[in-house]
Length: 366
Image 1 (cartoon, rainbow, N blue to C red):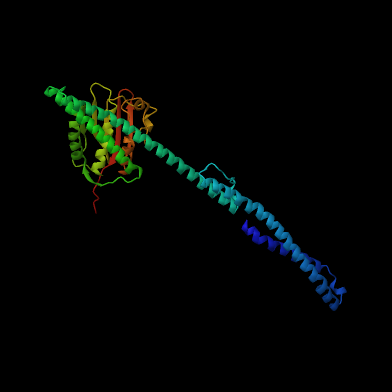
Image 2: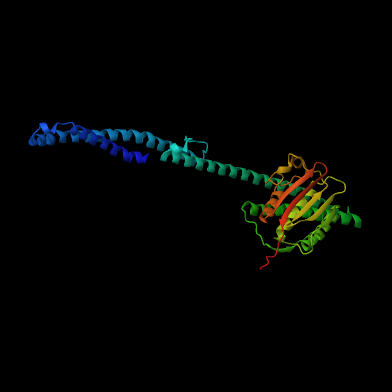
């Protein structure tokens, strides 16, 4: 558009000069004396040239004024109105953008940039609203979930104080239950604290070499104590070479295992709960499988269980509640380790979480 503004006056001037040249070319110069020709040019042609140039300037000015008013000022007014709407938080106000990019001028390009900005701001605003909604839901869920173990702990402590647990067996049962409920509270509080780090992408990692067999032997030994107190049978098998090593953060991997098993325990519905931990060799990688014999997950829910704040219909209707971020945290940690994770399930029978990590291999210099 601005190139046209510069070129049009030149075109108009060129047309004027061509008209003058054409006029002179048809004047029979041989029929006029030199002095008469000089007077003719000086008096008549000079006046015609001035009039022609004034006419060119007037026409050009009128044309450019109309063009600028239509192509620039009107669009600037629309853009100004659009920017006011954006400033007021109205991200639905749209500007007409040409479909053919090759035909757009500078103002159309500005419109297109505005539309891209508007859509990004709209997306950002919607994400913020959704994030705030999810965070409020998270706090509400965890607050609700904390009430259950607190009430249980108070009840069992009062039972011990009042002498209801009057035998060693009852006292041991009460103490184990209090320990289990305290662990549930600790897990919920850790989820709430940990979420802030996940949400801001500031999970602290301390990557180092880990011997997989030694690490999981220690994990299973620690988990066994908790499983015994809950009456859950824990099975463990490891098919790796004893010297298999991965690069991982020991503390974060422990969080992965605890979150997966905690989720299994939350929805365990069998009289005899069973959890199987299997470590498999996948050539350049290792595959960890954690399977339970709980209620399972429906096919429609299975693809979404690693989404943040997602809870299955079963968990929504359950007194167990749940924050809905445990498995999303697991997924992020595994992916930050360069691995990947997925789940398989048979409804009302079992659920198995699989995740893969790459083995560490020493680089041999030849």
